[in-house]
Image (cartoon, rainbow, N blue to C red; front, side, top):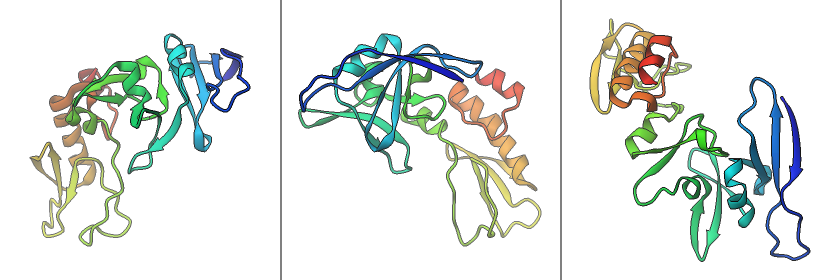
Length: 203
């Protein structure tokens, strides 16, 4: 992907100067829409859609990571923290904002969508799970639990605390989870196997 940039605002010779924001016209099949970007703290960069370039340039943004280590763009506003993705979407109250591609620094509008806490959680990628009951080296798919006391079908599919059967293999349980997750959360469901029929149902 080839990137060309131009500066949106010139740096000011003061300690409180606003960040430098650049307009970017990426070239290539994997390029996102035309966007603006700026450097954050800790060596990170965040992207926004062109229409949000002025918002990006109006404040000094830094990096904040959540408990899982995902970085987000944030600023301080009179003692309160303002997340860039919430400022862009205008989310208020308990409404959350889901990053479709799981990149917390890709704040282009097509990547952001309002979500309930359950929908936002449904799009989370599975984390590493450790338990004395899980054999060493076994990686469980999202929505799958392992029951060592069951010899023939030790893998169980779970969606929203509901059980969807026991299976002989982790893949069978994962596919059962995917199907139930699409029925439960639609396009918000993160799938273990990105099969076209399920993708069509999710979209």
